[in-house]
Amino acid sequence: MRAEPQDFSRVLSSMCTEPHPVAREAAEAFLATNPGDPGTYQTVAELETDAVDALGEIVGLDDPHGYVASGGTEANIQAVRAARNLAATEDPNVVLPESAHFSFRKAAGLLGVELRTAPVDDDYRVHVDAVTELADADTALVVGVAGSTEYGRVDPLDALADVADDAGALLHVDAAWGGFVLPFTDREWRFDHVDADTLTIDPHKMGCAAIPAGGFLTRSPEVLDALAVDTPYLESTDQATLTGTRSGAGVASVVAALEELWPEGYREQYVRAQNNADWLADALAERGYDVVEPELPLVAADVPPTLFDRLREEGWRISRTGAGELRVVCMPHVTREMLESFVADVDALRRTVSTGD
Ligand SMILES: Cc1ncc(COP(=O)(O)O)c(C=O)c1O
Image 1 (cartoon, rainbow, N blue to C red):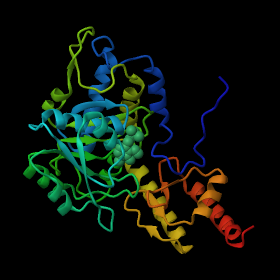
Image 2 (image 1 turned 90 degrees about the horizontal axis):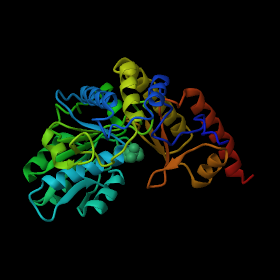
Image 3 (image 1 turned 30 degrees about the vertical axis):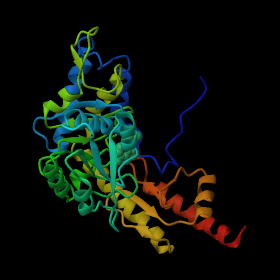
Image 4 (image 1 turned 45 degrees about the horizontal axis):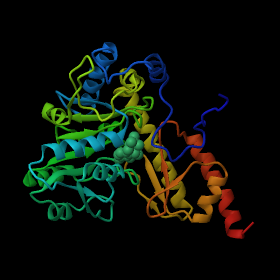
């Protein structure tokens, strides 16, 4: 094969990043292992327990249960599946913010669950009153986002926990992207502060593990029991994951990355990323663009479509929010130098766009 993967020097839109060298090495070493068959692949199965314990520590969960999923999509699907399986209704629904990741739409389609979408306020956080109104006796799950995909916002999780409680539903917190940065902000978001039942936290995003490495966590073993099916032909007796055979590469790389980076490495990474996001937000605001304040290291700015298209032609990998804003995710591979070069291109191109050259 002749193909080479892209390098990251112009990638500003991705929520994944270059794996840390130790994570890459661990992934390569465990490429031919299958934690889906833990009786046979025992070392990687033990590593998965370490990975879940370490992820539990990040979110402040003493006795975490869960597994290393293929990503946030699988973890979110599993949260919906567990809630549906545990719900005492024939007609379950899930109440979630309009800012929730599109993986919940896949979950709803697969699982035959109704989605009830609550609007967000002017600061992109879900309206708790709307969630309260939408929740009823058939609500199996209430979803809150801790680090939304488009604006990096955190929903009022405590209030959502109360709504879920009143409705007799589970609360799922989607911290797929935010999970590795929120512990270093001054937010009270930890699992032990918010009465969440399940949580998504993806090491292959801000955790610098190799893809595929998502995290599905729960405080209660019953949630995993609700997902488990019997596995007659394997050495183990049941399986709670959505996929069967799955790569041990992700599992090993999670353990390696966490051993290397938790907590100080991730703290430094967050500070660098946040400073970069603040710098870029200021630079774009100074040039007259409306910028959404980056509470976490993610910048959205109202840049004209023609300029956006020219930047893409220059090779910048950038994306748009649903509302059409330029969206830049300050992942660990995004350096200040890269952003300076990006802003220099903004300056050069906006002149040609305005003069029509
Ligand atoms: C908040 C959130 N949840 C879930 C996902 C889905 O994760 P994955 O692409 O790893 O399946 C994403 C992806 O960006 C996300 O931002």
